[in-house]
Image 1: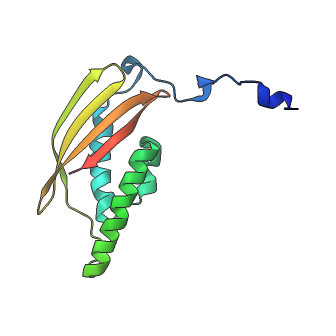
Image 2 (image 1 turned 135 degrees about the horizontal axis):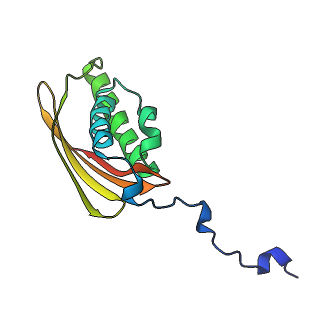
Length: 137
């Protein structure tokens, strides 16, 4: 005889899932976009810990960035190169909103020897911006 718990279908409760927040209730995303771009390049350079951006990115972004950190660390170890703080400056920043509570941005980060583009998607969740995509090109 099946137990009472196995026959009861529990309704899915979205109350505890991340809740979308309208753009009007969120701060200007530009400072966050610029900081995420700068910090991401510093993390890949090995001079900043990835944990420092944990609260601003979702799990997929964190995992993907962690993979790149491991690869960067291995490449430096093979070449016997120590991490050095990159001299970077923020170039052009483009921020657009394809719909409410979504921001997509590109940031050009200029270094001494090369410039990189950082593409970021922010979503308004639980009353703050959170990066759901981040790609350092």
